[in-house]
Image 1 (cartoon, rainbow, N blue to C red):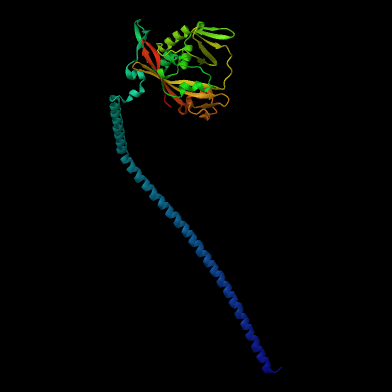
Image 2 (image 1 turned 180 degrees about the vertical axis):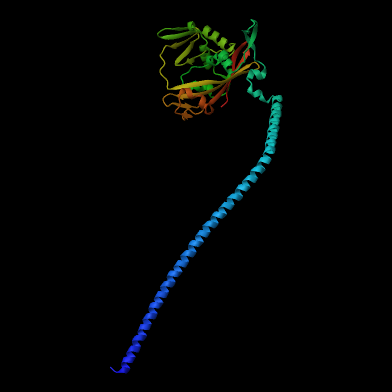
Length: 346
């Protein structure tokens, strides 16, 4: 190899070494710069986060202090106005109470609360009867208020006496429940059935074949029940399952003595109220037909579809609004009450 070639080779080698050194230096520089940038970024981020947390805490404390101060100011304002508010409330309550008392007195003065009194208190028919003895031995009259219970105890028998006691499995039993009737409009056979209730036991003669009632006895019972014999007419009538026929020659009523079979229907009727008005005693009732097998109530207006189902005989009062209503009127004559009319209210 010539010197020229050696020199050229040496020059090339030096140049290559320089290039390698530059690349190494550049790589080191970049690596150092990257690490430095990373360190600066991390430091700045940590510092920023710490500053942010410190700032947040400082702002939170400041807000809490401001809120506490506002609450104190509001409490003071409320306390200052509370006394006046209580006074104002008390004045309003007193004013309303005074208004209620005034209107209450006006209603009382206008006798608005008279509807709460019993009928005899409204019409002045309550009497004073009975006696009681005071501690000093003095006897004074005791006041008796004529309310519903008093009337039932003293006059409830009037309704029982006019029961026809017909077999409820037969529609004839529903005759008196089907319409309004004055006494003179009721069929004579039904009046005779009512009179039968008034007979004394000894007046009903019974043997194994027949049951016999003398015409004079039934006529006397009729007069006791209705106060007169104006509407008395001889003829046949039915009591329960007994069919009485009239024998004009013997003036007697006879029926075959048979045992009545069990019935599936029953007429239930309860007194809802009783009161007097003038010379008339009113008895208000609720009535229905009870089917024992179905445990259902039927209306006298529809014998084919029950009004209430799944009930017992004692559930009449709680279902009263859906059942028939009646008014019995008894007119007073010679200190006794006699049936004058039956009105179907519903």
